[in-house]
Image 1 (cartoon, rainbow, N blue to C red):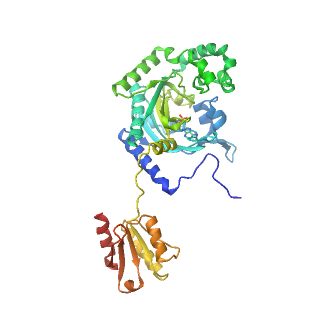
Image 2 (cartoon, helix red, strand yellow):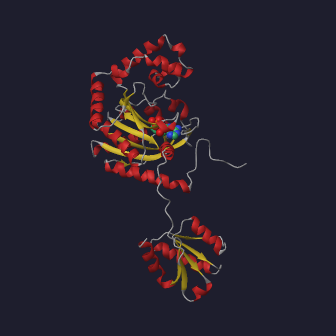
Image 3 (spheres, protein in one colour):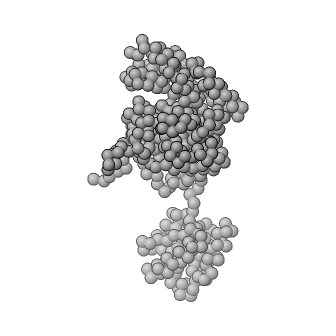
Length: 422
Ligand code: AMP
């Protein structure tokens, strides 16, 4: 039986790879401009990192992790998100020693064993931003602005920022108590998942999408009205800086996010083009995460965006993708004996810095020309028997269809001047 890709994963084929290059280039361009430096962490970590970092009772940790033992029985997990690994790397490599504020970004695959559907995969790619080492609300806004600029540079439109504060260790305890008291006599009307959430993580009841739960939650006490002085001030400053920059947002008191490490600012960027899985990115502050991972208390704020969802939106908005890079030269031969000489010539052209290819399968000249067309060759070199005996090759411009004989010794010069003048 043929073995397909695992459920929830997909191949990115050569015809689509330029979209990925384009997006990744823009991410790097914008984030370097903002002073973020790229970091790459392993695709798997010790499971404990995510259990402690993301939170024991979260959906990710209880249901969605790909966990397996190594040969010595230590539990490993394919990373379901990038923040906990980046904070681990920050602590482990003592990055805070060289500068008080460390600004990082990453691009990489994440793995969650979710039920696949449109825009939801088991292996998906995120780009993320993390600023570690400052409590300043200005940085929360910088992270939002940087994320928006990436989207904007890629041409994404009609995005909405949903904003909330989830408070801190101090004020959240009181709020959760208030919320529990509010839900207590209504819990029989909640969906079965929310009854579970009510017991383990009542805040998550707030972001249930089911109508029955939403009806109840509408009247629930709001977290932004129950913040401590420090969190209230922080939230007010974030709002005021956003207003200063004329960045539009909607306060969404139900936004709590699926990861326990968030404190104070929480936000999500949604797109109208995405249907049920409408979040294109999300983030927030995680001031207690470093401590949770046995590091010294170090505040942080970050954001992560799903690249597959960005591509879906870009396709729906009919954003023009950059053209596939054509190949400069395609070398064809009319006889088998010429193949080795053709290959040498091909290498010479490549060594000169031009992109070049040939057909190794021994097809007719017609079929070689068809391939040259398919790969978008700008020039084709035809090594005919007669011409070759006279030290000549035919150089054909694939756009104008003009062709002429060229001295083999002078071919590189001819090619570079033709290609430079294009
Ligand atoms: P999260 O880490 O859950 O805050 O997710 C951040 C972003 O990653 C989301 O807004 C989505 O764009 C994307 N994302 C999360 N889970 C998936 C998934 N299973 N498949 C595709 N994209 C995802």
